[in-house]
Every structure is written in C-alpha cells, then in structure tokens.
Image (cartoon, rainbow, N blue to C red; front, side, top):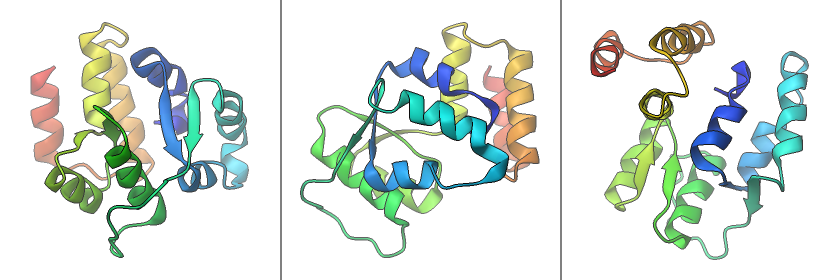
Length: 148
C-alpha cells in the first residue's frame, strides 16, 4: 500500500503505528523506484510512525523474516494492539498467540466503512496490488468485493 502513497490513509485510520527497527530498515531500503515513498516514510517517522525495539523476544520462529518476527514480538509486549500483517506464516503464528491481525484487504475494508475510500478507489487499489505482485486468490478477491 505504501507504494501507491497510502501512508495518509494509514494515518487517518490508526493515528499512530508502532514498528520494529527491523521493519523500519526494510521500509527504508534504497530502491530507486521508491525514493519518493521512502522520503514520505522518513517524514512520518517519529511523528505518527514510532520505532520501538523488542525488549524481550517471547517467540523465536526461524521460518519468519526478522520484520515479521519482531512485529509479532512487539505485539506480545503491547496491550490491546492490532498487528498489520499480510505474510501468511506470520499471520498463522500471530493468530495462534491470540494477536488481532489486519491485512491490506482489512485495511481497505475499514477505509470503505469509514468512507475514506469509494468502491472504485478500492478496486483500483486491488488492481495496483496485483500489478505489483501482491498475491490474492480469485476466491479471496471475489469474496472481498462482495463484502463491500
């Protein structure tokens, strides 16, 4: 979502997002195609995107990337948080730990519910995600569209 300048949507929906240092590092990796988005992320850091270190990891899951693992561990250190994650293995582990999760489609559904986005804008978001290589099965897309 960040690649299509959806940072403002995240700010509207959540006001504050806490990320692990490893997630920050992933977001700010130099990629010439994403320099504008990287600058927008840098501007949001320490404003409404807050970077926190994992104090004491409670789980170790070598099948996850560092960002996903740190995000789950940060969620376990927080009270009543919502984990924003799409990575399937990470979602399975987070659910098994009773962590509330929201993925990109959930974010889009919430944006629609709060009238921040029209159906047409959401369709365009889905199209953009698919063009960028984000995988969604046909069944998931149809079910999501029918739920709007």
